[in-house]
Image (cartoon, rainbow over all chains, first blue to last red; front, side, top):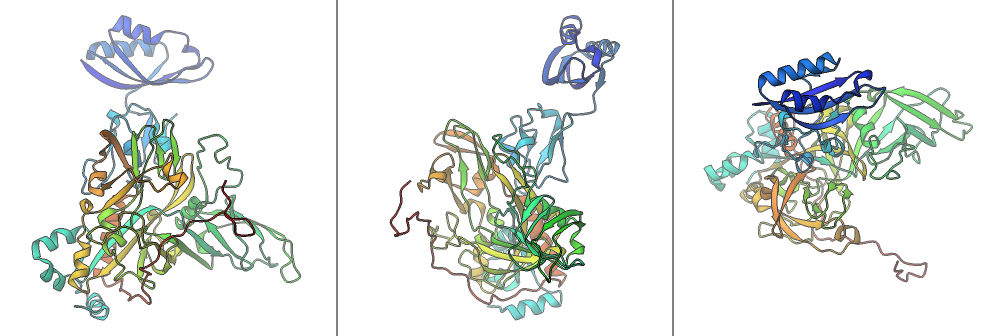
Length: 136
Length: 401
C-alpha cells in the first residue's frame, strides 16, 4: 500500500459524477480530501491523498482521466516562497502537521516539507511576510 | 583594557579579531575570560523583527512649477506633509487609503507604509499623488508622478524605537481568538509568540549600555547608520536578573540611516492579520571589547535570558501588570513549552536566523576594514522608568472611564 498526494482538475462538465465514490468502491482506494471546490459550470479542483496498491491507484487515475479530469502529481496547493520567508518562525505554532518546521535550533531556519502539508492554509493568513500562498 | 582608537587602528589594518555574539560564547569558554578579552576586539550583535516605530523622511526635489505639498499619498498610503514643501514623512504602520481595517474582522492588512518602504529600498517604482492649496511662490495644486528611490534627493530612515532590550511573550488565556501585533493567539493558551533575538540581541549583550550610546555607529539594514537618541519608552529601571539582564522590555534605541544604502532583504513590509501593517528591519551593532567585564556580558546565553509571559486577551490591553510566568529564550526556541501544566506551541515574530546572518555580515565588514566603531557622544540614560497616560479633565482631575 502506498499513499499519493494528488490534485485533480475538473472541467466544467464533469462535476455531477460521483468520482470519489467510484474511487473508493471500484478501485479500493482510501481517500483523504484536503481541499475541494467543485461547482457546476466552473472549473473545480480536489486536493487529496489516495492510499491503495500501486495498481489500484494507477487504474483509479485511468478512470478519472476518462472523465476528462486532469491528474497532477507534481503540484501542491500550498506554496512556500523561500525567498520571501524571513525565518521569523511565526508559522511554527500555526502549522498543525509540522510541515513548516525548524530542524536546527542553532540556525533557526524554516524548512517546508510539502509531503506533510494538509493544506489547512493557516500559514497563509498568519505569515507576516506573505511567504505562503495558495495556487487556487 | 583597550580603547576605541586602538580597536579602530586594528580594524583599519585588517588585524581586528571579531566574533559574533553566538561564536563568543564557546570562544570564552575555551580560552578563558582574561585571555579572550586580550584577543577579541569586537563582538557583533544583531536583531531582525517588526519595528513598528519606523518610518522615513523623503525629499522629492522641486517640480516646475513648484509645489508646497500639503497632502500626499505614496502608492495610496497617506504620508505626513506638515514639514517643508517637498519633504514628507512616511510611517511604517500607516494603512493604505480605503483599507477596511478591521471592518471585516479580522482584517488582512495586505499593504501599508512598511510595504512602500520595502518597495523603495528594493528600487521599485511607486506613485506619488499630492495636493496643495497653492501659494504665490508655490503655485502648483496637484501632482501625480512615479518615482524610485534613486529619483529622491534624500531617503532617510528613522526608527524612534528599535532594538527593544527584551520583550513580552504573548499568550491568550481567553476562549476566543485574539489578533495582536504578535500574531494570532489561539484560545486557551494553545500557542504563544515571543519576539527577541535573545543571545544575539544588541542590548542583551550590553545590558547596562556601557558601549552602546548616542552616536554609536550601527549596521541598519546594510547601511551605516547611528543611534541618534534613546529610543521612545526607554525604561532601564526594570527588574533585572543577577547578570543585569532585564526580565522585561527595558532599554530601546532610536536609529537612523540612509535608505539608499540599505539591502532589501533586511527591510520588509509586515502584514499582521486583525492588527495592521508594520516594517521588519535588521540591525547589527558592534560591541567593542574594552574590558573583560564587557566581554563577559556578551557571553550571555538564551538560557540565561528570561521573558515575561503576558495574557494579551486581558492583562495586556487592560494594563493590569500581571505576568503569568517567565520563560527563557532557550525554552521558547524549542517551539514547545509548558505553562500551568499545559503544552503550548511557541512561535516567534523575530528572526533569529536573519539576526545570525547580520552578525556575520557585520563581522565581515569589520574584518575587511569597511566598518569602524564610534565612541558614543553621550550615554543612554540608566535611571528612568516609563510613565503611563493619565486621563484628566481641564482641571487636572482624573477621569475614570
